[in-house]
Image 1 (tube, rainbow, N blue to C red):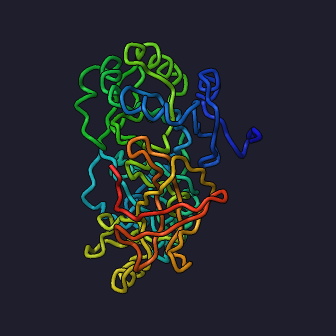
Image 2 (image 1 turned 30 degrees about the vertical axis):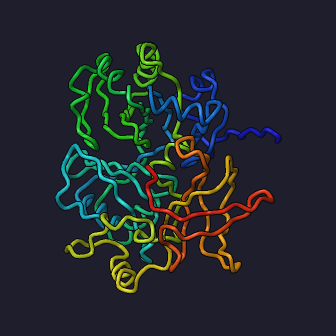
Length: 369
């Protein structure tokens, strides 16, 4: 297989940590929010095992923020998401699907409430800032919308708590899941949330002071030696096993929240006003025609680019495989697939073809673990 490189430009930005991760041996990138996101440091399986027992530091600056502030900021935030945020609290993070006027998903960010009139929308890979500006303009809302200078460092893995306690003190280990607060590092305050795109536990540091962030990045590796700290990145195997969905891979703007298992974040019975609410009421009433499911694949390895049709024994398409990997835990390939009705139930079987090989598929529930 040929090796290719990504041509860097103003359209594909590097991060403040790029020079460091390149010295640390990053082997591949992807592009996320028009920015470089590390995709591997050597073997993804080796990194998976390390993430599950030690601690990793991730450059996830590509997880960009959309800051929305002003008198009508809460109104705009609520207009964007189907989740009821009327009782949201300052200092908390909220997983909030963003919906368009057709009831389909635009993004699935984590929203941080910094003040009653100030929010950060920590976005997945799509241009939410333009969506927000369009809604604000069309509804004549009094808000300010921009991308702040925030470059996230994630500290993930079971030993992340010990490493962060060593640097910030015991108080940081008492932070509740999806809570955030400000912590001092050498005279600079950093917003730190107990969150991250793995199920192994950890923190995300929302770095606004770039130089302090670089100093912290270096300190994490210096003080993390006793915990076997290594550089890392969101891990394909760990996230599929854990059922962590990826916007643009597992679902996109052609899918609605009911199809993606986000029912608990859809507030149709409340009095809140959000875009696409009537459409979602109709979808719920009529029932969905497809659903994201897990699949077990009889294969010892798998290479997936794009999506692949899953067929039944009659040669009829029953869905499409959207993400897949080999799972060391299950000793077989597993994946996330959009399965059509009436086939989206556990124990349904099918087959797919990848690189000339026909593989048997069994539908199952998510998450795998």
